[in-house]
Image (cartoon, rainbow, N blue to C red; front, side):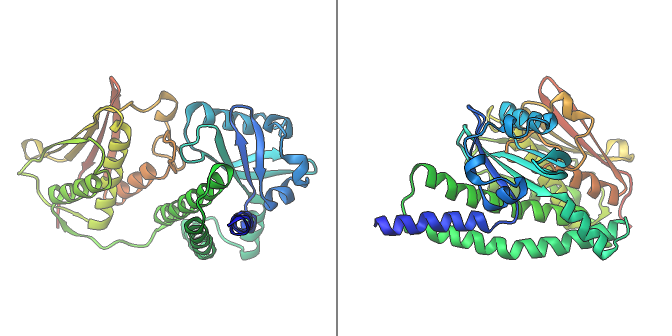
Length: 352
């Protein structure tokens, strides 16, 4: 059994060290580094023995903004995703994208994923891409495919290892880190693909009330263990609109998921209503939750990509909603009143 455990520990290390992205794990209470993979050693140009045990603010003492992102993630207990952050390694200054997240339910351990953007910039030069939406979409699609294949292998290997050994302590946290982060990266790639997909969409006459009902049923199934009360009020006079059913379903699933995640800790109530007031445009859809509200510092940029106040959020859900609304010639607004958040979606065009 000891041999099996030892081999499994080596396999866990092998999986993390096979990743090309630098990974650092810190103890949030002491702000010390307790783990780094091979890619982190190469990126920092330091040996592991000189990294482990160091305080994160001593290792990156010239990078006050980077340190402030880590402290913000720990203090707010939510994920931080930031693109194009300048940091200093012992021998160079470079730009990175950063993803900081808590490791599952462990309040003390936070993982920091870094992606050296200098390599991405070189890749874009090599292919001589124009700065256009189509070029970005092509790049995302290509990179997503290249990343998802090894990602599936990594997750499969970690699941096999987990079945063979009853992990405890540090090793259990490492396995959870592998599983959680591979799943998170997969979801992020899917969201990026949706966000950059600029292909023409097929539209048809859509019963909006039915799309919203179906979206509600899907979200209710996702959160079937949560005590969420849905209050629905659909205007029967609502006319059909001209749109894409899959995109509209994604729109309302995202908005309803947002509401449920915000309200799930407070005996959540989600109110859904549709309105076609006096037979006049626009058609209105209102989704209200009794959650914690949207923080003031996020309100201005809430529909921008990678903006989130969720612990495990990617910050793409609302930006995708805004894109879908735009492709349907509509508008989306929100308001927070007494911690209640109301999203108002408006459509100005009817069916053909």
